[in-house]
Every structure is written in C-alpha cells, then in structure tokens.
Length: 370
Image (cartoon, rainbow, N blue to C red; front, side, top):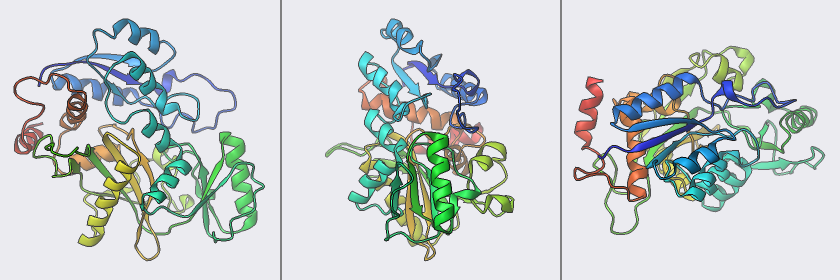
C-alpha cells in the first residue's frame, strides 16, 4: 500500500501527571516505552513515516499544526482523567478531521463504562453476568443477586481495583469492598455474579461489512472479521493469595506467571459460540478495526462477556492480542499494519494500485520469515 504519514499517539506511564490520592495501580493501563518503540518499528516496517506523540495537553495544538501533514493517527491513548478518558483523543482527531485507527468516540466511552456496556450487551442478547451498581454504597442489595459476588470499579481496565478481596461471600465483606472501590477509585462500584469457570479472551480484527461490500482480503471471513485463536488465561500457577483471579497485581507484577494457552482446548461448539458472541459484542458497541472480548464461564461451562477492550494492549511480548496473533503465525508488524490497513480503507485513503494488503498466504509467509 502507499506509505502513509502516521502519528503514533500514546500515554507513557513515566509521563503521566501526578494526581494526589490516586490508587497505587493508577498507571496500569498506560503504555511502556518498550510498547511504543515496538509499535513505531512495526509501522516503519510497513513502510510508513511515523511521528510519535505523547497524548498530553500539548497534543491538540501539535495536531492542529500538523493536520495537513498527517494521513492517519494510530491511537492507543488511554487518557489521564475523566470518566470517558479513552474518548478524548478520538474526539480531538475527529474535530481536526484526522483519520485514526480503532473505535470512535462513543464505542471507546461505552467500553470503558462497564455498566453501560453491559446494559447494551444485555439488550442485544449477549450474555453478561447479572449486576448492580453501587453509587453510594448504601443501596439495598438486589434480591436477584446471590453470593458469592464480585466487586470492581465501574470504569477501569487492566485489572485495576481487582484483588483477592474482589470475591465477596457475605453482606459484610460486600459493603467493605464496595466502600473501598468508591473511596479509592472515586467512581461507582460494579457488583456482578461471580463466575467460577475458565477465563478466556477472544481477539479480532475487522469491521462489519455493509451490503454488497467484500472483505478486505482472504484473511477475513464473509462477514468481514478475522478471529484469532482463543486464548485461555490459566491461573493455576498464580499464588493462592490471588484466589485464581487475573488481578491487577498479576497483570502488572507477574504477567508471565499464568499459563497462556493458545489455542485454548475447547469443545468445537463452545469455540464457535465464543467467537459468535465476540463478534456480536463488537457490533453491539459499534467497535472498529480491532478489539478483544473477555469471557468467563459459569459453573455449567456457559460463556458470559465480562468486558470488551476497544484499545487492547499491544505489547509484543505480553499483551493477549499479540500472544494470539503469534500463536497463529502472524508477526507483530503484520498485526499492527493490518490495523492501519483496516482504518485506511474505512476512511477511503489512497492505498495505491496494489490494494491495502497482500493475500493471507503472503502474510503468513512473511510472518515465518520474521
């Protein structure tokens, strides 16, 4: 495809502004230098000119000055503050008329707001655990919910606010944990039915096709999606203190401790259902280009969507989506440039006479040489 001038937008942990009273895992969602360097190298490997930019208060004037030079923004900004912080950079890009990768303003806001996303998923027939929101901590417990329950912040990702105390067995521990979440994260607490089954995640590329349009390439199915092998996060090796949970501590302090089983060993019917539900969740929230949908099974082995990640982690070594791509032989730079290709086609950018991507066979041959 034609080389583009790509603005790589990110929020580095080391550049995050200090916020008095912030929880100890406040920086968990932000990017590492290694991730940004890997993304820049991958984009350059795709032949693109890359301008890295921190998503801070200087971003708007910088993009304003460069708006005639930039073809596309590769956005992974999580934002620093605000209940819809992942939508702030997409809103700036739309104001300036700069095309960008992945989901737009509304989908990013919805995916971060877990209760709102769950309401939409439920309305669209996508199973998600029964839940209740506690804004003050004094609300009566919904009699339809029964212990054990699971307590977490309403608007955080990367396991923030999740610890061994998140599973509550009685009213007293529920009230204590709800109060802690509200006090520590300054937002409502989400209380869900606790699901004791396996932890699985499904990564996908693509976009729903409008009538009469064809998939981008033979990498994608007839509906416009490429679904990676399903990843199971086997937490058996994790210390008992974490109670078998993918906690903030596990994700940030010991990310290589779980067994990442990809492809997960699943019955064919369950695998088909997980993939179907992942696409249904993606479409329900209006996601674009790339996402990762997290599931947990109940005691009977039925899948429920926990959340959808419109800005999935892209660290080449430890991020779930990258592990899935690697498991099927897709090299990191191919994955990253495929996200670029999807966005470029959505915006009708000139991708040159050879088209946006090579065929599937060529992509995986290239992966094998990487």
